[in-house]
Image (cartoon, rainbow, N blue to C red; front, side, top):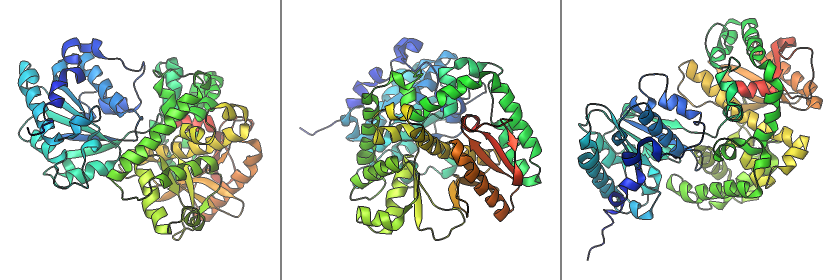
Length: 521
């Protein structure tokens, strides 16, 4: 008898789509939507990002919440009145049998859905097909086995109102699969999903801050007369400073509530803090097992996902590189030669293979010196401070009891939030490209973060500890003089006291609280 796994997915369709029978009662979701939900679902507008193009890819590391976002969107639309039968969800990682003859199983499942489920409702309105974890049915080393790209292209042909969304670990997995199909680059988009940032965590702990007049938005800092781009273009920083002060005044009545959550967020990061139904108020609600689970999920991602898009012989080196970054906490850059000797590989393997693989999974970013065409060193930033804690400490005790460790995590979180800050600035200027955040070495020390807006660099120094302020300020001032830029930022921690929370210092340096900066990113 011939082996045929072709009905395995069809047989479980109703189990994977319980809303067909139970509607809104079928869902068990976190109390608060993930932050990405709002720009994906656009609950206050007509349509959604899922409907902008025929195909949308959501990419990000395991555990970041891609599946949760899909189900939150389905829940939202059913709650808004859409027929539950308009939504088909196919999880290819739920059963290894779904990954055998996956192209045939996909088409059979959709045929069943079309005839038995969708056929019962008015087909003039849009309907949605969600293919979760499509990277698990990729076969880059098995060219005779069809993946998901061509079947999806066939499913989109001649079916008005059909929208398909897929999830994967890395954007390259989607782009490579679609390169050999009739789907053009204009017909699909790829949206990265990252761990929750401080702003999202704060609104989870204190939902009243999101709903009250104290809710602040970064939009006016990204575009308009009072924005950072306008200040750089016009050379007039006062409107930007005034806008920062206005935003501070909005939240100043609850400043201590916000400050009290910074260290918990630094210790937990944006993955663990969202896992417990979105209500982890402090690290006291976590155990070492939570951090172990996070560490193991990263290991699984490296060993199971990386081989699908990068040819790396020793995947264990990626895990070791993450552990090295966690121990160093981006305190000092590593010379490439040191890494070459430590891992017993050549520089090209480090720079062109290891670091890009970790970056594609949004796990770790290698940062080189600004305005240096031949960098000899690289600074390693893990993108989630919870992972730093998991790899270096095992739990949050050390972070809570050691201010220097807290300051180290503030540096790591500051980089991640600056990447997001730069991305938001670029998007507001119509620049559709990934931002680059680097560091700069001057005579007085180092500028922690440098990114560009329309080719103009923005230097940002960090003085989380009071003893670091003078050096950080001098270095940012040196940068503004060297590159003749109208302003720089100095982020200060709670122990750095001043007469004004927002100050304009010499050489156009604007000092503001660290907590306010990451709240606005």
